[in-house]
Each structure stands twice: as C-alpha cells, then as structure tokens.
Image (cartoon, rainbow, N blue to C red):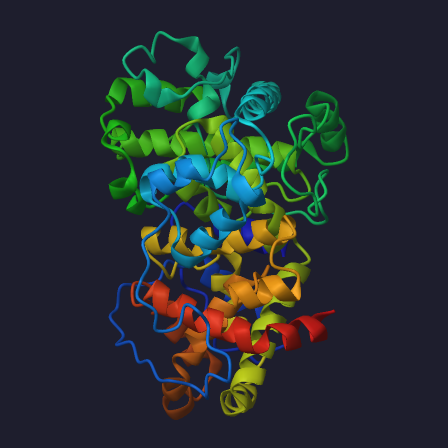
Length: 500
C-alpha cells in the first residue's frame, strides 16, 4: 500500500485513470485510494435532498433554528478574566463555538485553544512562556531538517543554510537581507505513511506550559530516524515539494491583503531556502504558501516519523497556514489537529476502517431501507465516503464551509478533553452532547440527504461514488450540521454503546 500511495502522490500531475469497475473484487481499497487523489470535477450534478426517516422524539437545538452569529471579538475578550484565564473552564466558550463557529478576524487567536495548544486554565503570562518555548522547539525541528537536507544531493542549494524562525509577513521588505527567514515560512502539502502512534500520547489534554509536546527534540528525532530508513525522509521531502506546488489557491480570498502583497524577489528567496522547484508559474503569494507548507510538513514528518507525510495532509494544513501567520504557531496547531486526524494516515488503515464502520452503523440505525439498498450494491461498508473521512470534507466543502465544520468539530473534541458535557445535567443543558465523531455524523447526514436518489437511481457502488464526488460545492454546511446534530441526539448513546 505504501508503494501505491507514493506512486500516486509523486506523479507530477494528478491522474484519474484508475477504474473502479472491479469494486467487488478482493481489494476494494485500490479504486478508493485513487479517488483521494482526484479533485472532484466541476460537473454540475443537481443536488437532491430528501428527508429520511422520522427525526425522532428529540430535537437538536440546531434544528430549524435561526442562524446564530459566530463568536465575535468582543465576546471572545469577555470570556477571559483579568489575568487571562478563560471563565468557567471554557464552558461558555465551547457552547458558543459549537453553535455558530468563530469570526474570521479572531480565528488565529481562538484556534490554539480549540486544538489544545494552550491549557484552558492558563494565564496570559503562562501562554507567553509556552509560546516562546514552542517557538524554540519548532526551531530545533527545522534545524534538524536542515541537517538532513544538507546530506541530500537532490537539494544542493540548501547546503550551508540556516533554518530559523520568523513571521514572514511582519517584514517582507527586509526579508531578503534577513537570514532569520530561512525555512520557517515554508510549508508543505502531502507526505507518505508509516504506522503506529507517534511519540506523544494522543489522549493528552491541552499542552501545559511546563510540559512540551515533544521533550528533548534533538535526541528524540535523532533516535527516531535511527529506526527508519533515511530514504523515507528523502522521499517525504520530494513528495512534499511536489504537493506544495500543486496546492489550490481557494484560501487566497480568506487571507489578509498583506499576505498577498509580496514581491517575486522575496518569494523566490524564501522558496530557495526550502528547496522549492518548478514554481515559476506561480504568483508570489502562492510561492510563499507553498514554501510554508514545505517547512511545516517537513517538521511534522520529523516530529511524527511513524506517520511522516501522506497524501491529504496538505489539505488539512493549508487552512491553518492561510489563517495563522507564524509558522511555529501553525505547526503546533497542526500537531494538535493531527492528534485525532493522524489515524487517517496509518499504513494499516485501521483508523479509516473504524470510521467507515461507524458511518455504516449510523446509516443502518437511522434508515434501514437505505442501508439494505447499500448492502445489495455491496456498498454497506461505506467505502464510497473514503475521501470525506480522510481529508475531513476538505474536498467537498468550500474553504469557509470547511473551517466552520472543523471549528464545531474541534469545539466538541476540546469540550470532551476538558470533561465538559459528560454528566447527565450537562447533556440536558446542552441538549446535543459533544462527540469525538461529529465529522462521521456529518458524513452520514450527507448520504442520508440523498437517500431517494441513491435508492431510486443508483444500481452500483461506482454510481454512489461519483455522486459523493459531485457533492463538491453543492453542500450547505449548516444544513449538514443540522442533520449531523439530529443524528447525534437520536443515535449517540446507541452508537457509543455498540462501539465500546
């Protein structure tokens, strides 16, 4: 499977030649792997929504509600005490984000709390100490990347360079003469896969100010790579750069204007620092974006060598780098994001299989008629939503819709980490309990909304697969979330009991 992933990812242009005619053969994963690499075509398939079975006795507070406003800067400010601690342990904060998301102007401030970079009980002073500590740890990772790059004949231009840390957008005019800008602002988009958990415990709660995520990074990264072939990192380097160049530019309209007002000289300088190639066709802001992706994804591959870099990871990082200007902050937010999402990129794919199995169960319990039809088409395992699971709806939703869904998903996960919403009293007050698997309920809702079309028109899994791919740009994320929360209300306890 590793060869399959790398052969697809390393191709200079995405190819969709693989056929899915043999879905009933012994290995249904082959066509689905190729699906992940195919950006959904813009062919307009009319979206058909039909109400599935009865919504049940419980009504989600999101159902048919008047759309609420997202968390505003003023509300965000009022959630803190005078010393910078979140009030009520973050309960009101989570409730607000769960209902409407976050105002775009404060996402860079809010996301580190949702992704566990900051302890919810930390003060402003403690967070500043942690921020400086995490910046240094990221610098160590980038320095280690430089050492590995120096020995790679494929990137001779990187020999002798220093990879430092800075916010590129703070001083673009002096960027060329400032050596501190070296590979910090780079980033990358895709990587290859190994298995097993990384050196951190995915069950950890927020990073404390005195407990760095990766301790003794220099020693750990060196010993980690003693257990893996150096060729793995070289392969990741090559694939990351190819994928970074191919990154789409949908995020552009959501970035501050200052991020787009960049000269070719500054962009080229940064690209050279991270060994980016074949980027002359890109605009300066896209060169910067690709360079940042390279730097951050390389650092993550070093930080978590069991996963390294896999196809699809760039889809998850790109929104973070579009919103967060500081590379070290974007990196640690990505680490927090990957604590849950990393299981999507294991070579054994056990995490993916578990999630597909859960989507299948949700559909079975909610709509037995639809489920029986899927079984008849040998699609009861729900492999046709593989791409949605792996890249968390990134290919099916617009940029803004994606981050809205992710913010609600992160708020649920953060609430669970903090112990909020577990008691019966909290469940009554919040109505729909937080769940670690809001994404899976949303995926099931997207299928259920098309039940009539699937039952009446489709006679093979290939047709359902094409329908799922055609959802890109056709979904209303809030209707999707309404359906997901209804499913949580009615099926959460049953699904959780069976999953245990």
